[in-house]
Image 1 (cartoon, one colour):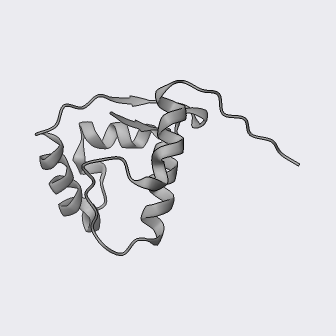
Image 2: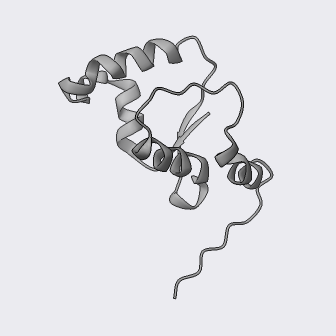
Image 3: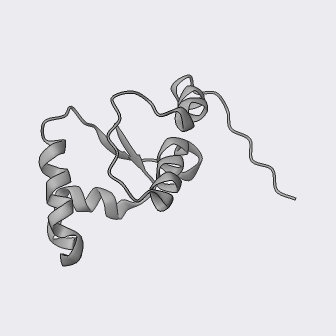
Length: 93
């Protein structure tokens, strides 16, 4: 399942021509790989996107390609909370 809080991502899956040309080859490779997977794509609000947020944070610091067959260690706590619909509390000071 792919979860996101951006309508643009949903549109990109429907129409790859909105992807900038510098990224289009990589995007098309991702789309080709995704066709072999069972996927459900939907929009969710920020409160429900802990895993994608954590993966995006990881992606900003990673220079190599990574493929996981299991949940990476840095996602275990977030995945557990989302899988069992446990609440997330955010406090601001």
